[in-house]
Image (cartoon, rainbow, N blue to C red; front, side, top):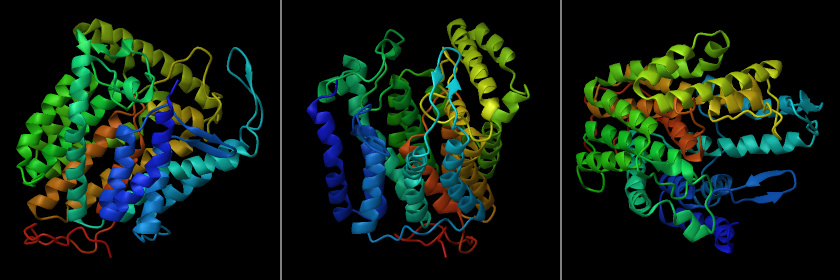
Amino acid sequence: MPNIFAQLSLLIWPLIAFLLFKRLSPLVATFWTIVGGYLFLPVKVSFELPLVPSLNKESISAISALMGCVLVGKIRINQLPQSTWAKILLVAGLLFPIATVLTNREPAFNGEFYIPAMPFKEVITLTLNRYILLIPLLLGALLVRNLNDGITVLRHVVLAGVIYSPFIIIEVVLSPQLHTWIYGFFPHSFAQQIRFGGYRPVVFMGHGLLVANFAAIVLVAAVGLWKAKQRVLYFPSIFFVFYLALILVVCKTVGAWILGILGAAILIFTSSKMAVRIVSAMALFIFLYPIMSIFGFVPREWLVETVSGIWPDRALSLAFRFHHEQMMLEHSLEKFMFGWGGWNRNRVFGSVTDGYWIIVLSKYGLASYAVLLGLPLLAVLSGARVLKKVNNRVGQRVAAAYCVIICLMMVDQIPNASQDSWVLFIYGCAIGLFVPLKTAIKKDSVVKSKKPQVFERA
């Protein structure tokens, strides 16, 4: 059970956000309100109010950032990105939960017992939940206006990783205990955090997978800054690359190692344009993954056989995952467009779901999946379009870094569910950076002064 400090920390976070907005720029204050809340506030602690979605660390952080932008930063939030597709996806994302409720007005049988129909009042709850979910993305899209803002966000991603690294090291040495010591309980299965004869850190994220994936993205951000020849805290970025690579290693998660190595290798060994081509193809594949799964285009048996020859234990885990995904996918086809809704109506009795894609598809349907995975795909494809107009090295490298980071985040939504508030904020920052350009960037527009106006919006 959470202690009193766990609940108190959620209550005081809006005050901390207010102080951040009083001292920092709206962009930086928003970053630390959303990302800091995700990194340090307790998981599985929330306040429940009638008709209102659960007020947990992510929703409280998002609402606090929104209030800070409006009340302190004086930011107008009644704007949408100028991209037609971005507007369509955002508006549709707020409307589709209504359709989910209206198409689930009857009880559902999950194979063992009946689950009640969704009452009409859930329209309010689900719509508010979707809006709160999208707040970080909307704020990122509004606050990132030029290349300098984009670089600022990458720098603070690296700083967040450096600040978090001592807590990671503590748990690698002592075992995952910080959440228990500070908030009074351990948020997940302790056995799942034992790897390679030691422990992988959980800190305040709830699971070692999430910490490791965060470490992978932080490493790729550092590599992107290094390739763009941008410093962090007056130090060359290469120092942070080596240090954050070590932090990723001690997280002891193979999937995150693969993501970090893949992202770093793409940025280091390919040109910016080639990197964006590669990740654009990967992002499109991820977006189409449910359709490909339905028609049998995902070679699951071959993947299991290939992994079994290298790592038999992981092959069993992969086969288990594929089996349960197929169960959920078949169930999802019965309400394919708008899903089964909440209250575990989307689950088949005995099923285990890990991937974000199947959770969203079964719960909210293909329509909401197209929004929640379509927005990062839009960011990547917009980055590819923008890169054709960029003739300076800094702009190219920063654009490539954002595209690679977003693609890696999308890839992780197949095996895991990690599309959290800070991830959506990064999606929004990329949309703000890429959509649209005021003018094409000229060849001599290299970042030399403190405030170069490139990637600037009209």
